Image (cartoon, rainbow, N blue to C red):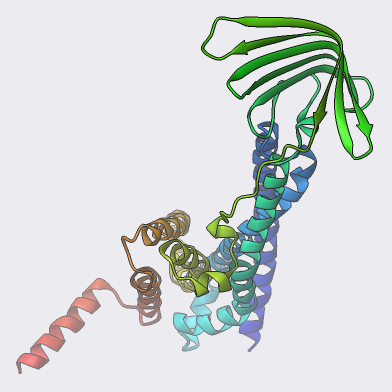
Length: 370
């Protein structure tokens, strides 16, 4: 139908514009947060753009759902405001008949949301964790930054170099504080450089002094040196077997239905189910009175979106803690909202009100009594 095609065209324009705005806002906020994390040493500063891209990709299911919801609400509310819905209703069609063109437009978006939530979301989270782990496991020499105190990977040494003369191979005014084997050692030198002998690397310090102290004793040993050499290695952290649940593939979660895995599955499947429900909710709440305006419905729509997503987060935690079962919570949350949305659409389709509903209930009671 011509009306259906015009509705889908307007939905496409509104959805595209909303998606561009939301992606821009999320990218800006993510960039600011990622730069803050990089400045605190959580990520390599050179990986900021990669981390930002993976983070935005992880947010895409929610962004697409919100863009679809806003597009449906804005398109239908404009049609109410311009009295186009009056013509549609006057032709014998109701509000429920709009669900068909809306879902015809929305089904590709819903499939993308499902693919992102089930496949891309754990992949992007895993990439972020890998970048973070690689940066945390870098060697001591790679951690040294001129003019900054840097802690070693194992937390047993603190380095300070005033400035580098040749990249990170040499520097001046070197300070190293070490705590290991029950001893505290402070070494300072005018200059330091890295020398390579075959496959090994050595740190050579020139014109400095070394202070040793046994922890718990008031005895100090001070020595001066013209040249001091020590072998250095990667000194990386040992890899752990712990894998965050949000980085595990969906198939792996389905194979091991522990409480934490069920909580993560409720979040991933909930993103897709919420997207379907928001198509119905957007159809129901878009009904506005042109004389009153749409401010109240717009505020309610945004509140409903935020509340729904917060319930998804809370449900993930509750299921992981064993407070709710997976099936019970999914049916209770998504099922109840689905039925409520259909009832709301049916109310607008049949032009029900509280008086008519109460009258229908009273007539049924009288019929049973008779």
